[in-house]
Image (cartoon, rainbow, N blue to C red; front, side):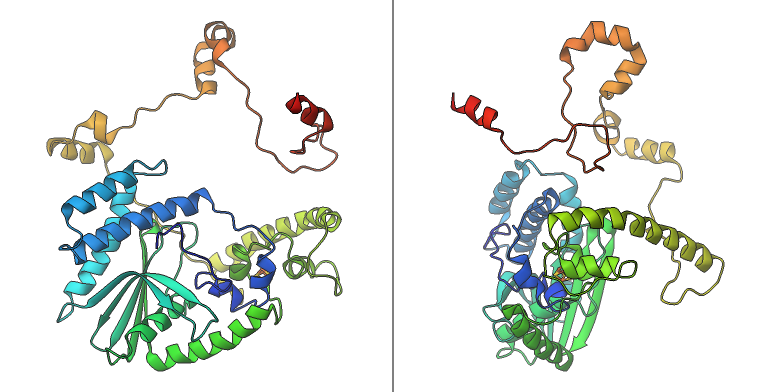
Length: 391
Ligand code: SF4
C-alpha cells in the first residue's frame, strides 16, 4: 500500500494518543474533513524514499540497484522533493543497518507491513515502517519526518499498537518475550528507544481494547489534553477544549458539544487575555526556575541546541581542497526581495525602471476585531459575480 493511500480507520494507530485519552474524540472528528498539510505530504515523500532505501538494502536480490535508481529518480521529480531528504533517510537506514548488524544472526525484516490490530481495535490495522524479529524480540521502528514536535518511544501508544500487531503476526514463529521500539526523527537529531516485556504490552492491549470499545461508540468523557487536542480535527470547535481553557476565568455549565459561531466570537475575545496571561506566567515561572526556585511541575532546561561552525572560512577552505566547488556547493545565489531592490536603487528609479513588472497580490485572510478599519472580505460568491460568470 502506498504511503499516501494508507486508509484511515476510525481508530487509527497514529491517532491512538488521542482516542485513548479522549474516547469520544474519534466520533466527533468524523464531522470534520481530514485535510493534508504540505508538511504531511513532504513526510509522505520522505517515507517513500526511506522505504526504497530499506528495501534495497535488506532485499537487494528482489530490489536491485536498477529498480531502486528508477524509483528514486521518479520521486526526485515530485514538486516537494528536497535533496536533504537523502541525508535524513540515510540516517534512518543507518539505524536499521546498525541494529541488524549488531545481532548474532540476521533478523527477519518486514518493511511497510500492514499489521492486523483487530484483536484490540474493531477492524483496526496499522502499517509499521519496519519490524525486525530476532530471538525472543520484536523490534518496531518508526521514521518520523516531522520536526515540530519531538516524539518519544516510551509508552508511545502508536508504537505499542504496532508492536501488538507484530506480536500477533509472529507469535507462532518466534518465542516473543521482549518488545523494543525505536523512533528515528532525523530532522531534529532525535532517536528514542524503549523496551518493555510482553506482559506489559499485553496489559496495554487490554486497556486499549476497552477504550476502543468506548471510542467506537463515541462514548466516555471528553478529556482536553495538550497532546491529545493538538492535532484533533475538532480542536477549534470542541466545547470540552474551549471550556477547559476558559473555565478558570469564566464559570461555564453544561452545554451542547460544539460551540456556535457567536460563542466562538465571544470566546476569541475572552481568550485573548488568557493566552497573554499564560505567556506572562510562563516567562515568570522560567525566571523563578532559573533563579533556583521551585515551581511544582515545571523546570528550566536548555533549549534545543543548534550546530555552528567554529570558523566557517577555515571549514570551507578545507572542503574546497577536497574538490568541492564553492559556487555550486557551498554558496546559494539568492535574488534580493522586491523591497530590497527598491531600497537599493530608490523608489522613483525603481518605479521608472521596473514598475510595470510589479503586481500587488492580496494578503492572506486574517481574523481581526470588528473595529479594524479594513473592509471585511468573504469567499462567498455574490449574486452579481454568479450572474457575470454565467454570462
Ligand atoms: S479537541 Fe481535545 S477534548 Fe476535544 S475532542 Fe479533540 S481531543 Fe477531545
